[in-house]
Image (cartoon, rainbow, N blue to C red; front, side, top):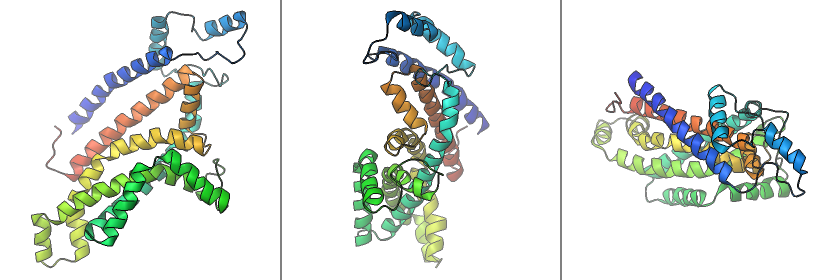
Length: 307
């Protein structure tokens, strides 16, 4: 297992390098620039700004400078928030995004597994059809539609919770963005667990456990769910990635000061360093999540030997 972990960590280095390279040149190829305003700046002011941020250098020089600085942990200053470095901005915003993402992940896993197991144990009944119908709706409706609808109903019409903002970070501030972020992933988990649970309940060892007269709860929880969780565990890595990248939309809708909001503002304002910093952070998170899921997969299924 240790050899597998080391190999995965070593393979992550070229992956991050490719992601950074592609993102760097795509950002530079996009039309416009960080200092192209509706009212153009005087030529001398523009020249000074370009020189200050080294944007007057050839592109390959900019790329080499960025890579060498990034290897030392220096992601440069922000073009929009000029009093802050990228590391400072991400350091301030990351706790908000992690809190939101973790709560959404917990809601998606717990809700999805419970709904999937319930539907599987009542296969072809009205409960099964209801759960799968709601799951299908949850998958098809994107969170940039769910978010405004939740705000309209529960914040504006019923005045039960705030419409946006982080506030003290309590339940009332988190409930709507967490639901908007978790709902599509909850629906995916429900469908995955339902299908695998139906197969698990028909396996020989589960039927043997039933024949020995074990309690139904023991058969389901101990013998069936362990195998049925493997597809759900496999989906954890893309789920975590979706919760991180999907939070860019949700954070913007609910005006949460997280990394996602900075990513959107950076892309809209051509803040090259801010976008690059968030891209690197998300890439590292995705690679780490994939590694953790592979390890968890091996622990759940001893037949899998990564080494």
